[in-house]
Length: 391
Image 1 (cartoon, rainbow, N blue to C red):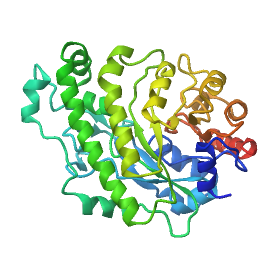
Image 2 (cartoon, rainbow, N blue to C red):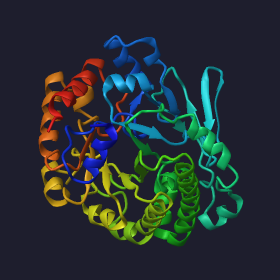
Image 3 (cartoon, rainbow, N blue to C red):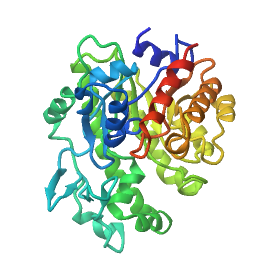
């Protein structure tokens, strides 16, 4: 079977020859550059493998080249814009430090000597007393005049002709609330959700409009490039959970955030007919799963089983016939960086045995493989997937 076949089987709750394996299909299921280079050198792969595609400098993540993806036997291929696009600028170097400004006007700073990721240093609307006061001064990014530039950027990432892996159509920016936090500032937007919900909704609507433009252009791209048969899933996100609870009250989420998420997902399915929706949210989001399914979500990532209430057996029992679980391969907070190769193998085996029966499972790590992961641990994970993934 091909990678595309395996993904389609998983999303339609049937068993393929093996569980499909994702690494690099999205910006939340890949590796930091440090982890990637260390792992490839450890296994002696050629120097070409050490020059991956840099898509998101903010997270310091990269995407393996096609040759390496074939060596790793990966079933997914990402297609999507780089995270700094359009109105964005950088990264640029000054005094050994790197600086960038994203398309929302947020400034980011990276010191290679001490930082693992870029740190946000400014929020455009942070100093205004209310969102209503600040919005007239703010200009949201737009893609209305950037169709050709978007097409060119996507063309640069297209997989080689003849590849049979499944295309994952990836988002162009962070989720609605995550971008709102960046524009307004974290403390301010938390307060806005409670004290100025109308202002919070206006800010979310501006971000939503940008996302809708992106998926309109992406839909046109899929049609004009004839990619409908290989495009398997489209990705959106919003981090709505913490390790122990939801990020906002259920009432706030259902009144302010979820209707806009539903609008976005409905729009994506209209722009790209037949596409399945993969939705990313970390944390303890078990209580939101019925709402996600009602919105049209087909698959959930990263299935963070270390968070409260996210027991894999319970998830499979209650939602395994209506939601594909895309993630859960290994815990990237504790097991992958700090465990032994044997503990990693045991966790991979247990996850596959729990989630794979009957289909509805795509194996990948719980979020990106970070810089502190020993290379032998990465390969223990990868080799365990290869060993236990067969149906």
